[in-house]
Length: 142
Ligand code: ZN
Image 1 (cartoon, rainbow, N blue to C red):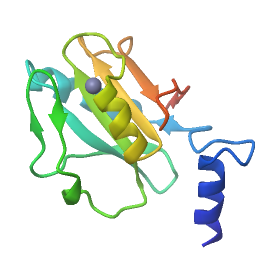
Image 2 (image 1 turned 30 degrees about the horizontal axis):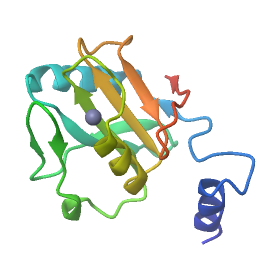
Image 3 (image 1 turned 90 degrees about the vertical axis):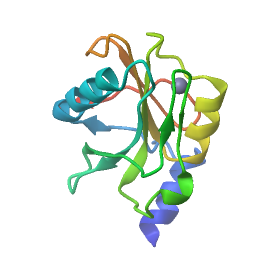
Image 4 (image 1 turned 135 degrees about the vertical axis):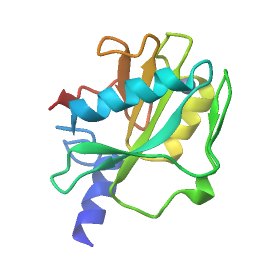
């Protein structure tokens, strides 16, 4: 339980480090995100991000019942597995602007500490990572 307490302390900013500090994301996962984002056009794509055993964000989880159209992707959050390895969300912006909308910020706040927006044309130059509060996060690609 100490781990959970530490996490909450960090999330509340009570310690020097943040839950997003030192995060790493797999290049392979990013490639997959770009591909799915592209193949979902003209609609948005939305999913969840999961850590592997070493704490590297490496997996994509798509929830059953996720509905998407050209403006948004809507998650059925009651389908979200209770899984502490799920660190946050990823979705695409066919608009090519990787800035979070108000709805995105609301979602970020509710589900996890780490969120990726992948914008058209869906490549290494067009994605941004955010924390729970919608602040841009530096992340190492491995
Ligand atoms: Zn969005």
